[in-house]
Image (cartoon, rainbow, N blue to C red):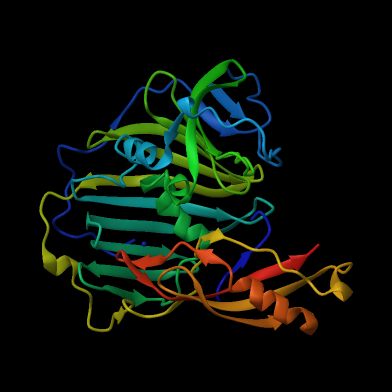
Length: 375
């Protein structure tokens, strides 16, 4: 079953490829005097930067108030491109190979899954990605023309898809935002200070808690505050192909562990053989098919006008939707909840728009579910 999108605020290879060798662009550890954690205190350790857990935030809405000081703002797309040239591997121009060991935790902070993510990357449409875990074993082959999958055919869950983003593309969340700007500021955590970039919405919209904090003496990304209650810390920073990579990344949700990521191997690929990216005959072609089991990003949401008889009740309506290649909802069908709320829920769901879901940069249709609640 596909994962629902809620209305509330809101790829280990079994063997290595022969051409991969550690080369002149291998990682080199940088001296690091501080470690960043999410905790209420650093327990008196001056070399540890403790950032309070995110369990709430105060938003503001400015209707008709003074306009934002645009002289202190930068376009977020330009900012993301600039930072991606300094941190992560998203904009790397040299083929690379990475292995990431991961642990996944539940809402109570207890470990529930563990495994390894491995990727051989040549270019945006040519790569090989493998998950080998207790709940997922698959390999994806991107040939430049199509995407093939060998092994388990379900799509990785939300936490598993977040693994490479946090390491390889740490600015993935900011890149998904629209109508926002970046404001630079200094943020103090105890006796330590970070250079931070705060993501702000335009006038008349709810403010966002999103921020990215960098080492005060350089451009190394050390902490992010993302969507919901997600917080990510970046430690054991290394240099690779002229950019900074964190070997130890911890993601928290509501102050509790969510993902523990450790880079086990990172190296360049000195030569590329097309045969190494050719899928086996029994791999399934995923290109051009309607997808399910993925979570598209909502860009515009509407709230239902419930019937008068239901407005004092607490209930939820699950709506199955099909999202077109352009991000608009093609169909909506309520499947659970009060039946006299179905019509309103379906009409509302049709007004939603989503960021087009792409496979090898080609938009594709998606079937998923959303939950509309009256609380």
